[in-house]
Length: 242
Image (cartoon, rainbow, N blue to C red):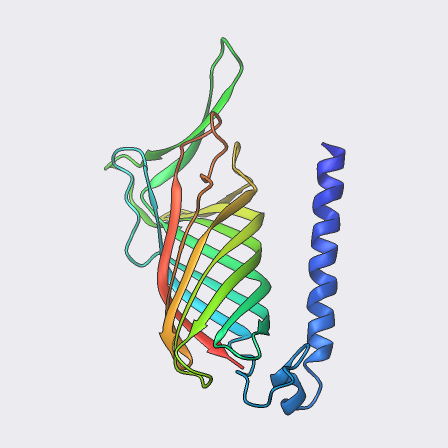
């Protein structure tokens, strides 16, 4: 357990170091910053593009228990910094990046952990609120540090129509529920049995600075055998800079 915590601590330290390094790098002139690392030798080669991505999405999940409903205004927000490695003679390139994601699921259920008295095993599930309970808002919030990889295809050497399939992987550093009713507001942190790691494919399809974006997590929200096997997905719009 101690080794796992130390490993996570080193991962976060590396993330912060890379962020500070890239932030310092961004203080260079606009022209140099736009070209980025390892600029292409051919002046006609595609310049580096879309190195900052901001995504606003609707978030939802599959395989929820019966009666559990996610509200349509549930949302997620991603912010990413990419380093692009373009091909000097082609409109195809690779990109790697890191960022932060925040998901907010507005729903009608309480996160409940049950214990099997025979085996002493815990299982976390979502239980819909009874009809008699009046609440104003109930949400489940997830916050991740993310790494990402993209294959980038463009229609020409200018910034035009583009397709970026890829993957992202993340570490869950904060999770909580928040319920507001007529009498009080309360939060519960660190759900039992939750999976702190995630991995899944991403897609960006757009033109110029705007794109449709989507993500599907191949890892369930809870560890198998310790909670409901909810599969998270998101879809929305992306704004891409530089």
